[in-house]
Length: 530
Image (cartoon, rainbow, N blue to C red):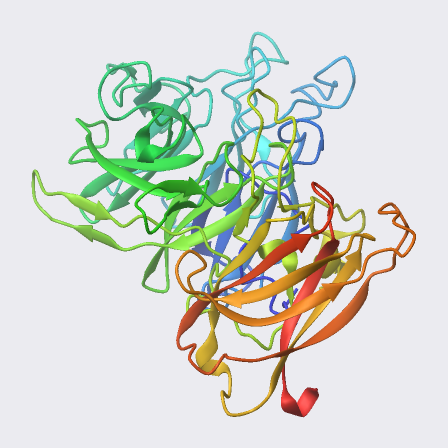
């Protein structure tokens, strides 16, 4: 499933119609290509549309040396029947499966076995685990209770993460609003090792006074001789000069698998936190939500995988990635430094997006309005300014054409004062001595207005590259039906833009709170194609 249009390396790095939150990345041997490795992304699946997650888990993978070639590997697990083949729930549809994890165990003969922790929260099945001889499954439940065919045994609960240390000892981490961790029995991979006990609040919860503020989303890694726990942190009202949010991931580190733990800091903020020239802080993305992810070293570089919200609720979450720098001071008491990743449109295209590739508007990482973004209250009641509309694809994911991602997630609600941005484009790929245009596909909404195309620092001295005038409907009706069409806009003043620069679409409209157009996709065009 190669992304011939360049859609599968930018953020979101999976096709825009696929909603995989809670992604845990792991590099495993490719079972079909000896000597090669793939990165596998295990997450929940926002397939229910109006609520969290789904009743199935799917996996996507890519070669470690080709992170723009993501492949749909199919459904790896669906908890539909119990040990005796009977349906689990009265509705016959199986349980809802939340944030999972997968761990590899090497057997005495060196062959791998993979254990999947599906995070089934149905009463009596919270500790559900399944195993397979392949990283892409299928996985079969391996901890049914001997006493009740519908129940499982095991200690792991909400948002499980499991780790096998170099000495073969196994550890589990889980929790919601307070953290739990324990050494596990390698014979079961899900029960507490005899003679040990569960540690409660080893990383203190958000209701406690210290800095950890654990909320959910445990994810464990060993880096050199340190143990690093990534988790969702509930910020305090006023942290970063913004309101309370669990849209951030933080980390803690320790010299031993079960601590004691030292707080490290924030490593991603899904709000797109931005500091203005006057020192004030705003969010430039979806203002709130949840996120979950993990660290993965691929090709000698560390990446943080996480998810973002799409649309106006939390039920269409997309897989995102950010490169981070990891530095470990070895030895007892040594510190672990992880840089804070930036919320961008780049994904794995860390040299900057290619201006001459066609990108969907839905890879936007900056969307703000001229008014507060969300009214007080939950769930979200009204969004002011641009946002990404979550579309779905009903066909076979394995054969979906690349072109679907160009139109499935348009940027909508482009009202007066709204701004949509993309970080970052590599302007060194542009010949500054030749004419340049931008081709943009949009659907007018019958509202008279203008789309200004800017680059550079939008809060300081941005460069105005060009403008698109929208005449509106002659009869004054903003609800008229329009067709999507491509428009070419001559650009100017781009000669001073070097290196990686953000690109913005800024909206001006004659009617308040009325969208001028839906934006589908765009690309730059050199003179030879113009």
